[in-house]
Image 1 (cartoon, rainbow, N blue to C red):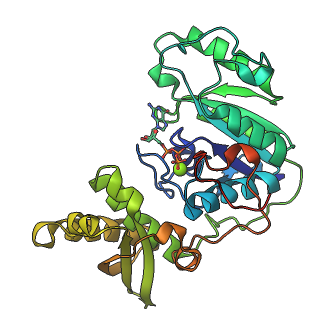
Image 2 (image 1 turned 45 degrees about the vertical axis):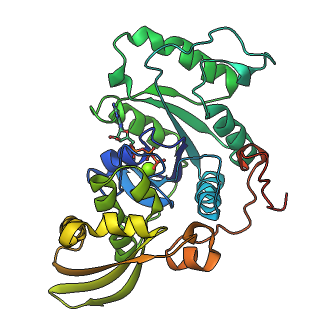
Length: 335
Ligand SMILES: Nc1nc2c(ncn2[C@@H]2O[C@H](COP(=O)(O)OP(=O)(O)OP(=O)(O)O)[C@@H](O)[C@H]2O)c(=O)[nH]1
Ligand SMILES: [Mg+2]
């Protein structure tokens, strides 16, 4: 038997949560075409032959501008640091990079075939997760000429040591089995870490917050989903029914208006979509009451963030490369 924890890390939007769902065979994690969809690490337990893989899907690594962003990155570092294996995910170049000659500096990280932002991810991993890692290059379905992968793979191979490089299209289920087999092969020998029927360690209310956010991600353009967080006001469960009341926090009055919609039709649609998702998770009837509240600056309010479930990871200091990018607004984190 093999068992181990596997952190799925990478830039936003490369398809990490989509991979977790494909490995689990069910849509536990929320995914979307918008960046920064995942905000917290999510465990999913996958059985693969004689191996049990404890996958940790993580928020996309980025340069944070808010306390929420710093906590999201920290959740990813924490997962990478504690994992037995790191799966770094990136995506393909759909057109060759504009500059194809070595960048000034000439080091292995100055390779123009590394996807923008991956240099920082590689530097972070070098500092935080010195253990074994593999690279998945996702979205190969977007490539007509697969030979275009070669210079990209070469760039990553020169930048850092990986146990394996696996091109995949999670959307088309192409290469996913090979990736899971390789991951299972690299795990340490040992007994299973979770019961046979364990799917995740997150409580139902975590998914309630996520699925309300998912309904909003599916229904609105970029600004509104990013301004939103959900907190639970009340939850009562009986054998047949789960009754919930939740507050959707937004940053501005205008966003509240958009979310509620004309005659309340938008918020009603959000409630219906979220309720259906929660019902299929808990397998019983769900009543869901939603309120919308303007909570300005919630992304920078530590106590508010913790109420929304975004706790700070303990003892994590952001690596230099992922500190805030605004030169006129220096971060005040201790270094
Ligand atoms: N073309 C294509 N799109 C994909 C593939 N895999 C995932 N996607 C899409 O990429 C988008 C982002 O997917 P997510 O799984 O949410 O990405 P993520 O890496 O978890 O993003 P964050 O949570 O923001 O870090 C979604 O629209 C997916 O449907 C793929 O193999 N091919
Ligand atoms: Mg995600």
